[in-house]
Image (cartoon, rainbow, N blue to C red; front, side):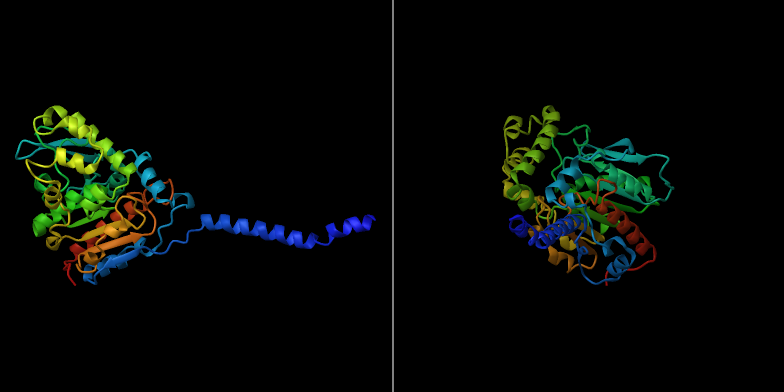
Length: 385
């Protein structure tokens, strides 16, 4: 009788053991797959040229995968963590530059004994996002300064806790203030080559500057991290409600800070009650009877892309929740020999974090690129193929 009871238990024991072992192995393989990156190499979009050949041969970062930790592969995690994580400690010295219309922009120069800066060291102008400041790009500035660049952050008038001495804020596609700032920096350091880097929505004014001033920009190279190519689609029509709310809240804080100076030309109450980017832009930036469509066309960052003569690197992620990959003009990079796009599968918007450790993967790529272009220029090559 005992045998009859034990037999059903003992017979399936090998089978049960096999199932248990198989299940444990499957779980282990699954957990391992979370920690093991399956990312492919970044996709490169460019036209064959002497410059691009030099860059691809010099850059080791472009030839290896972007490998974020398994829990950082989510695009929202990358985007949010990239914007809220504490930045490294970088010290700045502020300089106010008065413009031709009596407006003022703030230039925050990186200072410190940790950086080897010489009289003729190259200068890098950093453009933070639309609502950013020097602190928000300290990681990037630190990486650039450690490479031997004299580094300065450009704060648009009224931004970055600076003064507003005019009755207008700079619209995101108006490069006039940038023009005067670059000429001033060039005059101040005539022996230094000048390059520029823009983050996120800060790319719009730099792209506008490159196109509008063509070969007279005084810049030797530019780089963009998560750039905005199509303002109409990215910031007006397709932005998710969450990111639109965050951006509008920051813009309203800036507007409220300068409400007294702007009250004669901006209906502050209507602007503060606006909960869409389109209405806010119309109330704050549109002039006279100008329609929103006219304003967007006038400030389109890619409006003069044919006239860009400076080497350009763009770093974009196909999972960017703000600047969607469908708005990326891939054909432009395959047509112009001075432009290069590095596209990753992960990275979110201005994230590109492989771990919580700094610097971000994109920061290393940008510094590597700028150094390589200056090296290329020093050899006297032409940018065209």
